[in-house]
Length: 179
Image (cartoon, rainbow, N blue to C red):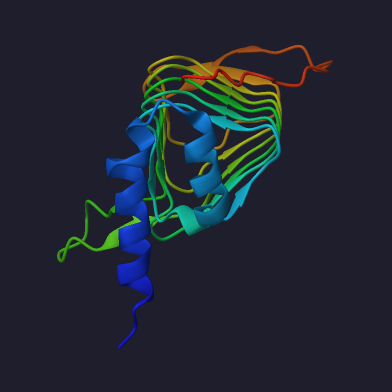
């Protein structure tokens, strides 16, 4: 009997249903360092974030995952670079269903997010998307295709609306005590 799926489900349940609601980031961070594929130094995961199959989620250094976000690593990986800001209630998805499938089969792919990407409030990144370094995804956008580096996209589906300064030097350091 393969216990790995059951253990993974239990690990996710413990975090998503109990620990994600604790207002002390130290406890959440300790657990995430044990359960995520990687948890980069200086990263911050705020309250009520959910992880599906956390072993396939890889966070770089100094990321800010804002409250209520969902990172779905059920079948494919999510790889997030350094100094990435993911806005509140955003969704990063790696798995869905093929709408043309007669048997409702899965369809998905890994999501790769480059360094210094900024994903806005309630944005959704769909399976198989790569977001290039320094790109911005506007609030409420649905990203269905790859986003070039330093591009600003918005809308549903997200379309290019501008370009970002390429001389980015910031390092995120948002680590609130009770968030």
